Each structure stands twice: as C-alpha cells, then as structure tokens.
Length: 264
Image (cartoon, rainbow, N blue to C red; front, side, top):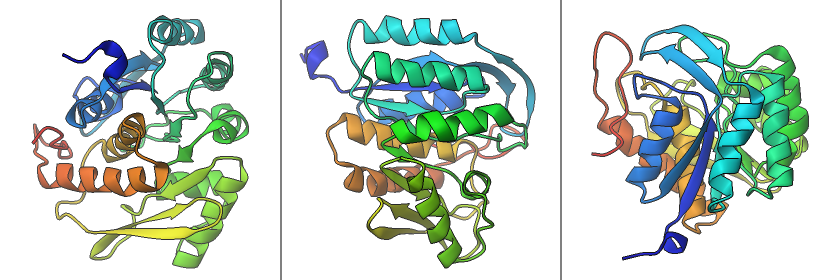
C-alpha cells in the first residue's frame, strides 16, 4: 500500500457545479481519472446545470483561505489548479496564499463567464487576476473569448492568436495555451506559447458541439499531470488527449449540453 507521501496530490480552487459537469466536481473527477488525489477549496457556490446558471453565492475570502490552510497544513499539494474566483477579494486572497504558503505555481483557468453566459468574475477581479495571479502562474488556459478579453485584441486569425498569446505571457505567466474550441474547422487547434516557442496542438473536432466543463477538465488535467511529475511541455498535449477522449464518451442528462465522460 502506498503511503500518503507517495500519492500525487492536486489542489483545485474553484466554484461548484451541482450537476457535476464543471467546476470543482469536474476537477475532482479529472484528478481521479488520472490517478491523482484531489484537494479542493470552494470559492463560489453556484446553482447551475448543463444549460443555465440560476444563482451564485460567493464564499467569504477568509473561508477560502481556511479551506486551503486546512489541507496544506496536512500535506502540500504537488500542483494547483485555479478556476472561477468570482471577486477581486477572492483573487487577492488566493495570491496571498500562493506566496505565504509556498504553493506550486498554479494552472490558471481564467474563468470570466460561464458557458451559459453568466459572469463569474467581476471587472475588478479581472484586473486583479492579470496583476496578481498571472505573474504567479505556471500556465494560463483561456478559451478564445477569455483570451480576447484579457489580451484586449480580437482573435480572428492565427497571427492574432499569436499576438494575444504573447500579450498574455507578457503579463508574467510562464506559458499560455489558448484553447481553440470556439473556432470552426475540422480540427480543434490549441495554441501553446512558452515565451519562446509556439506549438499548435491539433485534434480532430469531436462532433456534437462540445460539452459542459471542457475548460475545467483541461486545466485540471494539466494540473494532474504536473502533480505526477510530467513536465509542462508534455502535460499540455496529454491533457488535450484526455479531454478529447472524454468528449468522445460524453452523454446527456437532460436538454442541456453534453457532460464529459471522465471515467470511461
């Protein structure tokens, strides 16, 4: 039997999804599917399903800190994934925790809007994320609308995607991957940039119009591979393969978007 020190551990700091498709619930399923134990700290309690968000209750920043302190005091995680934070106060709290507890540089999924179109980070939170979390991040994983909002540029071509990637890395993150799920074509093409090299990550587009929680699963999968000791350059394509596989196993629970098939 492995000891606790032999088990890889990843910490997710994010909001909830009672429907199990996105948020903390998707993060923990991704960690489990990839053989990593999941810690979690809830930032927002969100009433949502695969088609809509009906209510949001932010968790007090002090309580976010208490959750992280509780698990970190027992065992330092090997990696950290950050998702929806909601407010500038939550962003500042998480940035302080990274510094004061010496947390690993996080995988930052810069969640601004839900897939249903509900804002999940206020305007002050956006500015705080750029100023405080991006410089502390191992990698930032925006989708196309998030990359446009953060970089302040319309992305309508490959060349402009590269300009946006350069701007985002310029905010201080070690690397960025701009997800290509919102762009058309037969292939889903993500753009990885580490400040020196651009790499296009291609996969055949899975039919069906996508699924609820793909961004959460992608960033969580990167964190899971990092927790297992995989380097960043290999963790990103491995995470893309994981999400592509989960998309092929997706299913519907109702009339909303499909749910990823995390566990086969």
